[in-house]
Amino acid sequence: MSARTLFRWLLWCYIPFLLLVLALCIAFCAWLIWVFRGSMLAIVLLLPVFSLVLILFVIAMLAGWRMIFRKNMDFDEPNVLPLNVMALEPMGKYVRALAEKDDLPVPDRYELTIGDVASVYEDDDGKNVLRIDGLALACIPKHSLLAIIAHELAHYAGGDTRESRSLVRYGPSINQLEYTFVRQPWLLINPLTWIIRGYHQLLLLALFASSREQEYAADAKSAELLGAKEAAKALVLIEILHRVPWLGIESIGTSMAMHRSKGEQVFGELQQRMKSMSAVDWADAFAKAWKEESSLYHSHPTLKERVKALGVKRKVLMAELGKDTSPPLAMEMPLWHSLEKKLSDFLVLVFQQRQQDIADLQELIRRW
Image 1 (tube, one colour):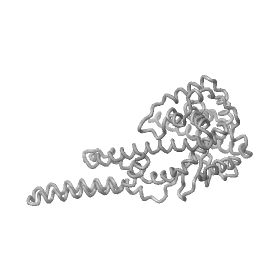
Image 2 (cartoon, helix red, strand yellow):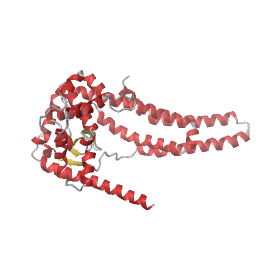
Image 3 (cartoon, one colour):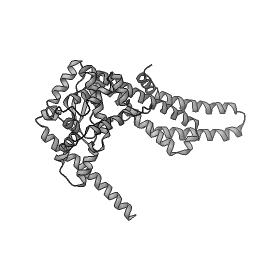
Image 4 (cartoon, rainbow, N blue to C red):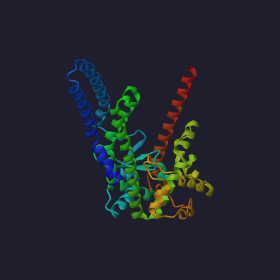
């Protein structure tokens, strides 16, 4: 049985499992009453105690259960800019061409975002949404970005985004239950609590294993469409962007917010920082990413595991670190300048607000 099948089965059984636990609790109370039916004293003492335990246990679970039945489970976030596909052309043309190669689903909507290279999800109306980071458009070579997009389209085809819609209903419920169990110490002495928490741990491990399977499958599809070497190079580039502190949006956004700089400099500054990276910088970042150890609680396989699965040698990737000077996709986008300014101004505004919040908190602590 694959990890994905196991996870789906465990998730499908979650509500029946909780109902079964309640049924067992009620059955146990009834059994005690039957055993001690001849002793009124036992009934007087045991029945109220176990009834109280059952009632408190049900109340604790209701707080989590109610979240499962919420109708509106939107993924919308404040740091995204919804866009018409025409504003991102010719990216839309490239995406459609990739999808046509293997009959993959195409996005119904595009969003420009900050803080993530690319991601996909399914909204409440069942529409496929593709999010692209301004950093990806401005700084990542076009062929590497297309390999990343092919990977994301494969998540549509594999049903991963639909599965996320199911998970988002159960996730808050499970988190709420765990929070309630930890917040109420008296619940931890109840054996039923540990049974449920054990199921949660099993579900979590299956979720991470399923997620890793999905990443391997999406990598394989990206390699099928654009070649294993290109797919591996894209993975390496993403890891390096995440591991070099001064290439991150956090670094430049905080710096510009502190100096009250204009946002239109953000992506130009990022491009210059990438170009200024030496061979040693590239090699050090790659070495750190390659040494990362895998864990049962990782949602993604390590870089080493993913590259090995693609059949690409480490020395091949090391030989090309930082040598891809092909232009980013933004260079082909007629409307990029206006999009860049809009997103950059928004980015600086977000970090300025964050800096103000920090300053207010520091002042509050000082006065206290």
